[in-house]
Picture 1 (cartoon, rainbow over the protein chains, first blue to last red):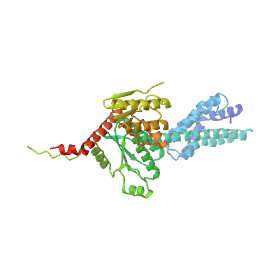
Picture 2 (picture 1 turned 180 degrees about the horizontal axis):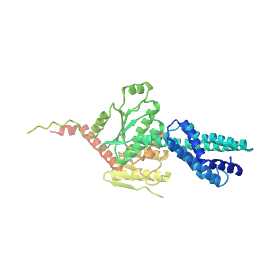
Picture 3 (picture 1 turned 30 degrees about the vertical axis):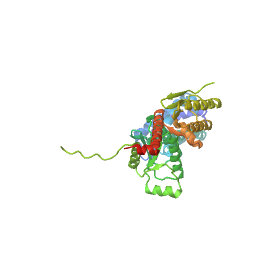
Picture 4 (picture 1 turned 45 degrees about the vertical axis):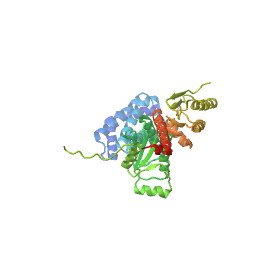
Amino acid sequence: MALSTEESGRLVALLSGQDERVTTRWTEIVTSSLRGRLSQAELRRQVQDLHRAIVATGDRGTIDLSADNAAELRAALSELSRGRARQGFSATETTISIFALKDVLAELVQETGGPNALHDYVAFSKLVDEMGLFTFESFVRTRESLIADQAEQLLELSTPVVKLWEGVVAVPLVGTLDSARAQVVMERLLQTLVDTSSPYAIIDITGVPAVDTQVAQHILKTVVAARLMGADCIISGIRPQIAQTIVALGIEFGDIATKASLADALRHVLRLNGVETARRQPRRDA
Amino acid sequence: MERVPILKIGDILLVSIQLDMSDQTAVQLQEALAERIVDTGCHGVIIDITALDIVDSFVGRMLSTIASISKVLDAETVVVGMRPAVAITLVELGLSLNGIRTALNVERGMELIAAAHADELDYQLDDDPDAETARP
C-alpha cells in the first residue's frame, strides 16, 4: 500500500512543517499509553528517529514501506520493536507507539483543512496501519528468537554428564524428560562413554518429578544402547512415590540394576570393580 | 575382491572392519576367521566396528553368525567400538544383537576376553577332583 507522489509530498510537508509540535504531541500520547514505564526523554528520542525516517523516505520519493528507499524506515521500526520486546513490553504497548501517529495526523489534517483532507487522512492511516503491522511482526520475530534461545540454553544446562570415578560417569537428570531431552541425554551420555572409555554409567533420576511409561521407555532405550556399546547402566535416585508408580504402571526394568541413592549406585559399581570402600583405621599416635 | 584383515595378538584374533560389507566379503571373512581360529587355537575374537557408520540388519546378522561360529570353535567374540549413533539406531530399530558381547574399545575387549578365559580356567581347576586332593 503505497502513497501517491502528491500524498507523500503533503505528508512530508505536514510532518516537517511543524516537526517540534508533531514529536511533542506524539510523545505525549505514547507516554500516557505506557504509564511511565519508559522515560519521556527516551520515548522522545525514539519518536524523533521514526519521524526523521518517515520524512527522509518521503524526500527520496513516494512513501512505500516495501520499497527500497524505505530501508531506513523499516530499520527504525524493527529497532523500536526489538527494544520493546527485549524490555518485556506487550505487543499492544509496542504497536500503540506507531498508531499514536494517527491521532497526531488527524489533528494536523483537521487544522489544515482543504478539499483533500479526508482523502489524505485515509491514505495516511493506511500507511500507519502498515507500519503498525510491520512493527508487530518484528516484535513477534524477536520474541520467538528469544524463546528459541532460551529453550536451547535450557537443554544444554539441564543435561550434564559428570565423571564420578575412574571409569564411572553419572547423569543427574533434572526436570521433566520429553523425547527431545531424552534424545540429547542419550547422545551425550553415549558420547561421554566413548570419550572417557568408562564401562559404567549411573543415571540419577532424583530430579525427575514423575516417571510415566514414556519416560521409562526413554531410560530403557538409553540403557540398551549403552549395553550395545559395551557399557553397563545403573539407575539411581528412585523416590518412594516413583517406585510405587513404576510398580503400578507395570514397568519392568528387567536385569538393570536400580538403587535408591547415587551413593548406593557408586558403591555398587566400585564393588563390581573390586575397589574396597572400607573405612580406614584411625591413625594412632606412636 | 577386498578382504578384511585378521590380526593375531597373543591369544586373540583382531578383526577391524573398515569398509562396507557385501555378501561376498562377509562370507569370505567368516571362512577365513574359522580357519584362523582352528589354525592358531585362539580363545578370543575381537571385531572392531569403530569405522562403521551404519550397522543394519545385514551386518547385525553377520556379527551374530561370526559369534556363533567362534562359539562352536571355543572362542569368545566381543564386538568393540560401536558408535553412539549406531547404538541409538539399533535400539530404535529393535535389533538387540543377542548373544554378542560388547565392549567400548579394543583394550576393554581384551580385558573382557582375558577375564572370561581366566574364569574358565578357574572353573576347570575347581571342577577337577584330582586338583582338590593334590593340594596339601
